[in-house]
Structures are given as structure tokens and as C-alpha cells.
Image (cartoon, rainbow, N blue to C red; front, side):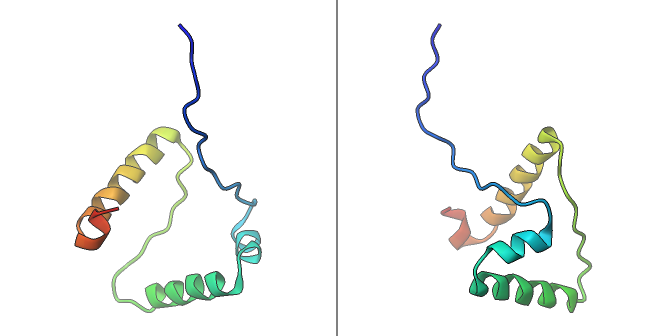
Length: 78
């Protein structure tokens, strides 16, 4: 049996921490991220952040994310 690569998988290498990531993106993207974070922090809805490092957990989290996107008619097309 032979294997053949059909397409390269795109990826973005991430720096070691959040501040380094923010420093590496442009000013407009940084502004949008910080604006959204301020909006979430001022919300009455509790928000929890977590890092997913196990591949099995990551697959489940991606599925959950796509399910959430599917609840929005415009994002469902994605």
C-alpha cells in the first residue's frame, strides 16, 4: 500500500504565551480581540477559559464549536 499526500494542511505556529501572540498580530486584530474580551468581562453571563491540550479532547471541542456555529444561520454555511 502506498500513501500520497493530497493537500498540505495549513497551520499557524503559535508563540509560547498570550502576550507574545498579541504582539505578533497587527494593531487592528489586537484592538478587536481586546474589545471582545472587555465586552465578555463586562457581561452578566459567566465565561470560563480553558486550554485544551489532549487531542481527543480537542476533537470533541472542535465538534462542539462547529455545532454552536451551526446554530447561526449565516455561520451554518461555513
